[in-house]
Length: 339
Ligand code: DAH
Image 1: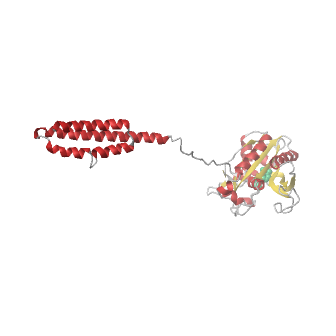
Image 2 (image 1 turned 45 degrees about the horizontal axis):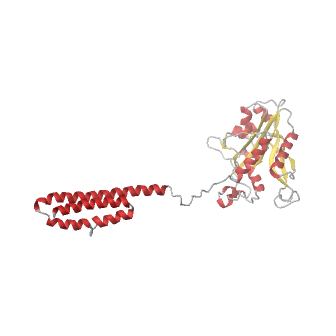
Image 3 (image 1 turned 135 degrees about the vertical axis):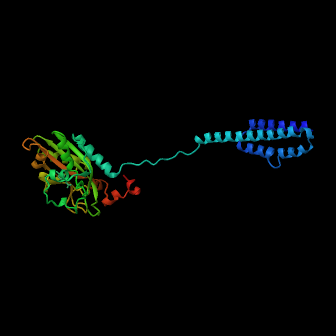
């Protein structure tokens, strides 16, 4: 009787091991647990048979019973862990899963416009220069020959820091920084962000972008300026666009001009974009003032040059027919997706 029970216990362990070899799936492991260890399973039934074991064998059979049950518990636990590891590995590379779609962004219309302008000027031999957005009064105003009482210096127009520095109101201070740090001939364009205390509306923001241009060499004339701007107009807006220079005033150029494109929308006939004038103002420009050259230690009797400043937002709004500058800064993906 006792030997029979011992045999049954050994057989149970062997059975579980054999069956796990055939099928070690999660479902089968659970089935085996129920069949051997569950409330109505083999082990509770065998424990009832313990009652008939002769007294002198009880201790040994009891030990065998416990160790067999433990062996089965362990075998099932190990199989379960092995299955979990396998399952995880399989999930890690499930070739039947759908791929993940990444949404790739693209350049902002202002960046696209800057790149296009820079590339156009590069082809004409200009290289890119940069300057700081936090400027000092000297580079933003004084060195650029701006009179002490010029309205643009006013706190109502310019953002000042407590230490007297300011957010540059134009990219023109890059001209000074470049002339201070390198010898002519100089041919640079400087794209960048500028800041003014404007009340935002359809054509104004508190920050905007310009591209500054500077050309310093011997015997530079207004004709050189005109040809560079003309070439720029043709490359960026097409051969049909003509340009017009109008007399103007800037402290850092003499003579100074404003530079217009024939209207890109109506071709010069007159429309609401050009306010029926046939022309659209694009930039300020002029011949570098001798005072500016002197401020950076260049002799105006030897060196001459031209400079210009283009408004990027303006160009982008014309290129993409954008009616309100504020769209460019709202970061609305539905708007930005279109470019
Ligand atoms: N800095 C001027 C502005 O912000 C634009 C400008 C005019 C730049 C004439 C120039 C220039 O380089 O020569 O209105």
